[in-house]
Length: 262
Image 1 (cartoon, rainbow, N blue to C red):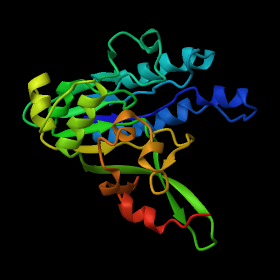
Image 2: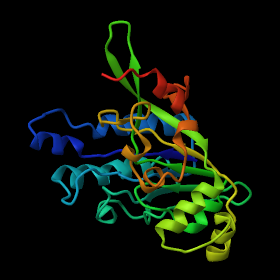
Image 3: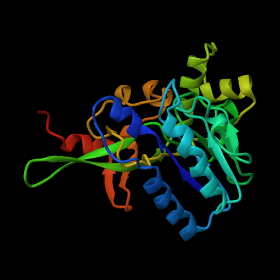
């Protein structure tokens, strides 16, 4: 199984309207994704939202390139799914037959080991919180690195950590307006019939490398994207940060302490 987040195909059209002209990137992005598919040979590809970029209007570029993009992938992968992101309006009209489109509330994959997969701009279905692992995009995590020349560079990064069950369920119940007393985990079980046991979480980097990102070592949790982070349902200070090549950089809290304010 291969997970990919935040392709934002058609971003170049939006940039062009702002006076920034760059070549169309869809073929390059497709080539990079096909290289991964051919290397790892997944039988299932899950795109975690924001396949397209234009909102609320779908651009001519997206209408032309997205069907071709999926046609090429279908030749290599037997099953392709999309969990809707906040940029994926009318995505169902652009993909060829056979592509599975899921709501923004995500999907639960597996039996013995359960994976919750969703974009991250909306709360997932309650059932997804019983997962062993939560995988989400949307946040575009990056890390700011200081260089010997005194210049800061931004690199895409993975974030990995554990969601504390009581904190996660408390935030979920509060945003749903559910009144409760005592243990929020027990209250969540009583409300939704779901057991939550501190799942692991991976926040995915953007696959499209020309997108901007939020530097996790300088932004406060409230500045990051998505309700789970803004409602402090998870403590990102304890999350580990990795570069795309797997280089471990440390915990978010530690990395924030290294950034000197300017």
